[in-house]
Length: 160
Length: 286
Image (tube, rainbow over all chains, first blue to last red; front, side, top):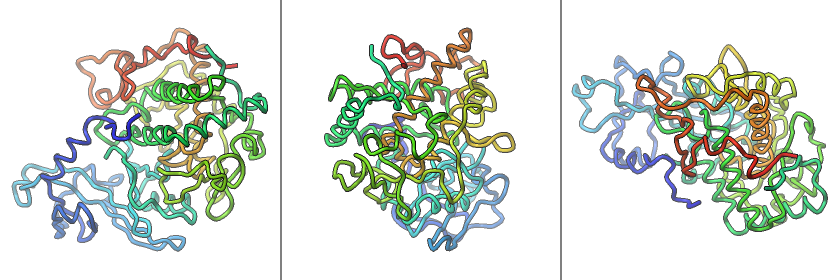
């Protein structure tokens, strides 16, 4: 029952990959701090650029929001991770097939870990046993469940 | 061979020894290892990774082995204890003996939802939450989630699931519309049905139980022992039905590649579902 056990054997591989990618935001905000910033986000999103299907929320454009809900500041954005070396036409040509949407949702600045369900809805670490159609609904439900609590500053070792 | 009892039938002594063994696992650090393991193996079906624990056919056998590991740790502390089950279709109120001072303690208080009663109250000093979703160091509960009310599932909900003669169905994930497994695991399916059974109980208890650190609440084990018992009941009701899926075929793709068939060992245990179909050599439900 070691704490360092790797759930699937892929986490190490993912870490390797992460050093070779850049983040390209599909919005003009979204990447705020930490690892993402160190990797060098490209913040000038092209509104005409096609968005990978996996980055869509039920056929709508990816979400971005910032609001105060029940006195808590909730923010969310989807960023898309693309292979390094692909800032220009090469990546567009290579297509978004390799792109992985990164879901960045925060409650009072603290990251809320979110996963996607097969139907495109979202499950968060706060509400692990139900899903929500949008990131905004996911963030609001997390605030409802948290009550007066703050999220942990850094999620414990969690596979990703 | 040992018995797993309905929690409502535990004697005062059995409750005291069970609570004592759980607190000892917590003190030694073993308990938190179990919490982390559950977090690590929660893989969602929107991810391209192997999925052994949730949104997957091996939901039942994975949690059976997980409970067996926990129970083994408990019984190493006190060989007389086992994991009791909570039949939430019967003991379905905040006043049930389950939530009394001598077993799990009661609901969280308003505001921070801190559990203030029973052996797992923070003030006792024996139950600090180390790997929770929030920074709160105490156990939280939020029965029925008043902000958006949730009820416990009823006998009809369970009966509907038990009636399905098929164990699981394509696409072998959280949107499988038929099959016993997802009817009990209880994922809502848009335009078809809402959250039910297993998932609904996690939501009803709320607080720690609703999130990624759900085993931080000891009721987790009671709940999953009942889920395990429902699998036993389904097997009895459908003796000619079995675990699905079986072996991979050439044409199988998509989610089949990420889930565990009858003879495919599940991480981290290295045990295949086929080795866990018969519990009777290990324990029985009384």
